[in-house]
Length: 132
Ligand SMILES: [Cu+2]
Image 1 (cartoon, rainbow, N blue to C red):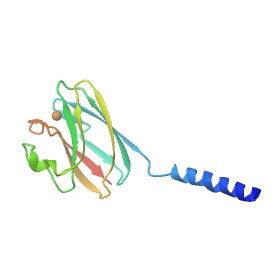
Image 2: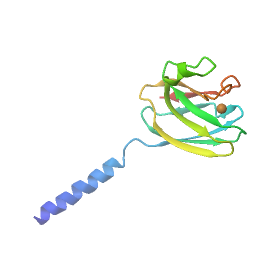
Image 3: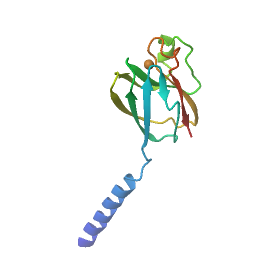
Image 4: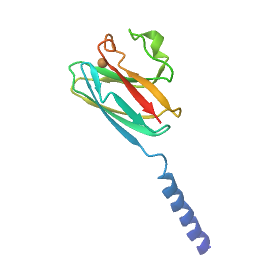
């Protein structure tokens, strides 16, 4: 019985160790301004958990919307584009920092990132998320 208890403890602690070895979280730090993303290109591993930290140094609200693979926005951003959003962090107020987490797409390639607020893409708020 005692041996079984020891065995159980070993199995349980092993499963804890293994679960801690899942995909590593990637942290992406991006600064948004009126009207740009810095950096403008970011790379994340396919399928990895991503912790996105967006600092808004601008004077108006901004967004960080990742479009689905193979789609890109022809401005103006509108209802035609809503269904093509893979994931987004919105309502990033001026002078604030907002954090969000998402799982990177499993399909490698380039994904368009835009700010969907009226006129912002036109002024340059387009970036590229590279998944590999
Ligand atoms: Cu914007």
